[in-house]
Amino acid sequence: MTLTFEERLTRLADTELNIERIKGIEKAFGSDNKKPLAIPGRALVGEGVLIKECRKKPKPRYFFLFNDVLVYATIVINKKKYINQHVIPLKDVQIKSINDSENPKLKNGWLIMSPKKTFCVYATTSKEKFEWMSHISNCIEKLSNNERKGFDQIKNIDIAPKWIPDKEADTCMRCEQVKFTMVNRRHHCRNCGYVICGDCSKNKFLIQSQSDEPLRVCNECYKILTSDRKIKSDNNFTSTDSSDESDAENDQFNPNSNDVNF
Ligand SMILES: [Zn+2]
Ligand SMILES: [Zn+2]
Image 1 (cartoon, rainbow, N blue to C red):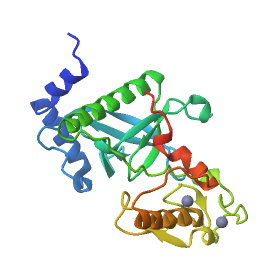
Image 2 (cartoon, rainbow, N blue to C red):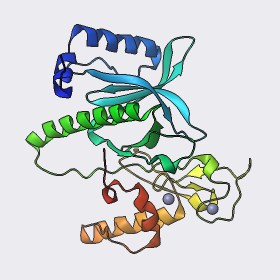
Image 3 (spheres, rainbow, N blue to C red):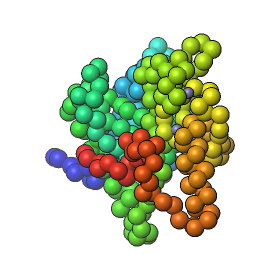
């Protein structure tokens, strides 16, 4: 019998098997299980290893897709344990396919974009990629449908930038002068994701979608962010149409400027 995705979800939620499996996952996290995973109505939709692009290099991570959150962790193989638990609420997630030509080494990838974090993941096969992406978007759609019943308004979600991996920048991406060494360390701008030097990132700015603490931003972004705030407080609106060239650079991280295609 073939079940639709929706039927499978309804079946899985609260069934003995699903609860058992979620409890098993919690156990494998041990003291690293920061948030309770077994909550009423939550179902495990799928799980598996994906290659996640990290700051230094792509690494295998174990992903669990629940109907309302995406969880990923580092696998400690010998101990059959998971550590470094990350929980991303799906209601704020957007995904976007990555063309295989964009990365010569890794194929079958897509972007996972959320207010706190944006990163690339890669599946082993195109079939696997398709299944992950369609299941994730089905879960998101189901959540937003539920929300739309109560609130008939379009949500504008602030998405965190994807961090440019360290190895992609030998010199500062802003001043293009400073070469990175043991002394001249790499930093990341939390607004544009660029790899930048210390001099080009002397300021911090409160990006509420990412943290309660002010975060390191590059000088370019600081200028834009502080003038944005000024416009907001002066006129009570934000201008999104700016001819500033720094904005053009930010465009690639702005989900509103790209069509999300599944
Ligand atoms: Zn610099
Ligand atoms: Zn920046």
